[in-house]
Image 1 (cartoon, rainbow, N blue to C red):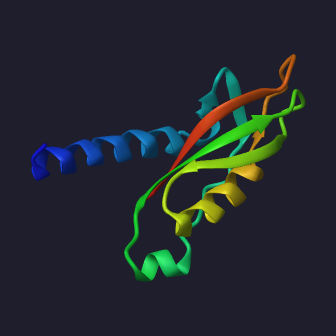
Image 2 (cartoon, rainbow, N blue to C red):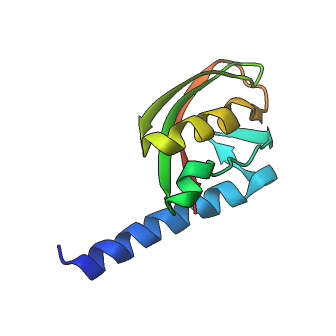
Length: 108
């Protein structure tokens, strides 16, 4: 694959993930509405390095809507902790049972 096409594909993927997270109060994951959203902050080291990217997390959400566990699935190691810290503070609507989903957190 030539470089311009690859760069365009990466840009589209990042914009799609960013659009999902910018929705804030309207964010839904696996039919679980996020009613308390915390935006992840870009770590200082990543800012100095001009580092951007997407972190994928496997998140378990209790029936009450609290995040019970987070497992990083992909992304730059400098961004993972910040993404995990923000998502841990998210709160979802209650559901009949615990659910597990993959969440993409974009850093621009």
